[in-house]
Length: 105
Image 1 (cartoon, rainbow, N blue to C red):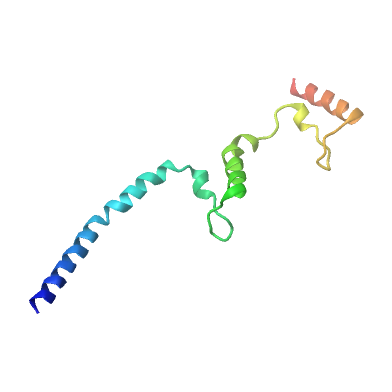
Image 2: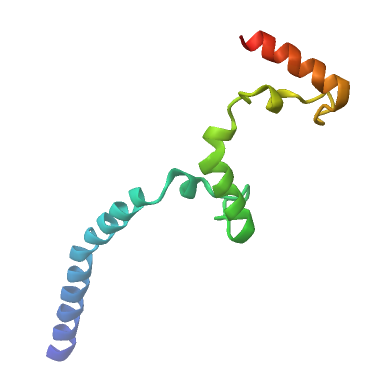
């Protein structure tokens, strides 16, 4: 009977020690979280699972470069696009470039 009680007390002691160390582990994880970029945290699929492979690479490229590429094109050559989304060519492009450059001045 004494052995059973001693084993029970030893078990409680070890469980108590495990819970005493538990708060240190989330603090270490919280310290590592700011090291991850905001894009890394947002790389999640519609199902809620983390992205991996090519999907993650494409998302990261778009997310990190999105602030600079999302701006409106600054040069007239970048703006020379038709209503259908295709680049202008020939006389239409020449006329557009002439008007755009005159408006820019």
